[in-house]
Length: 286
DNA sequence: ACCACTACCTGAAGGC
DNA sequence: TGCCTTCAGGTAGTGG
Image (cartoon, rainbow, N blue to C red; front, side, top):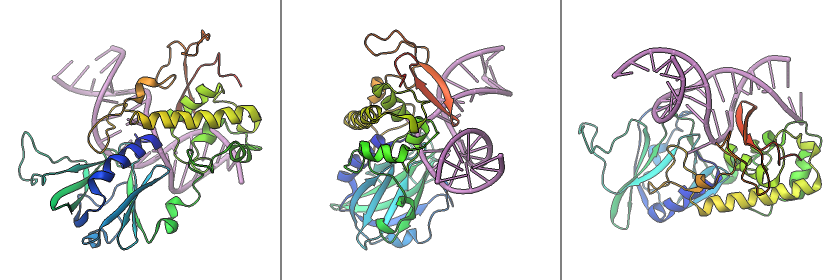
């Protein structure tokens, strides 16, 4: 599901619902997601949620004892807030608020009102982790710069591309290169920059690198403004879908006409490193 | 160090 | 209706 724009959209939606809240209880519905739940989750009761930040595709819940709860959403992870208490599992039938894929339920109180912060993840590729601080979270070490921050520059992309034989598509998907891109936005950015996804990263010209950095920034900013992209099941913290999928130029458009003015090419689907790549061979040539 | 491939898990969609 | 195959927003681990 979620690349940087979707995670950022979820973060923004959750902030106004949970920041300032006090955790009352933590319930896990099964022993593990992709990785086992960390021990001591129930020990979070009594702490306040001071802030909610994002780094790359991770949500960072900052707690009042300075610890952080990290959340990676994998392919299908989602957070939502239920205002009313959930129905007990014994109450079945229509209108039930339970879901077999609700794996983590954090009860909290905010402004005198009780609510639940719920993590749902059908495929369970996501996970949560606890760390003494964000700086000490191993998951965040080694991540490349934020694509919308100052650390992501043509110079940076050029320096990590030197000598690389791997296709530029694969290098951009590597979170050590730049943190937060996924399959959709890499395809879209390469199309905007007019660069073939198969080009070895080390053969990018300085001009191409400059176009690519600008394209990555632009597509992510536009996607955030649109609330992310909903392919099948992604929704934000309030249950609303994104709508950037209507702006895709290549992703999911195999066999359709290239949208670049003056280009008469057809979008192709190929497989790189086991993942679908969508591009126009006619205008993505360098 | 680099690169490609596989596994992890569930569900939706399409073909027959 | 149902069975089977393919595909899906990610990434950690393995082996060449």
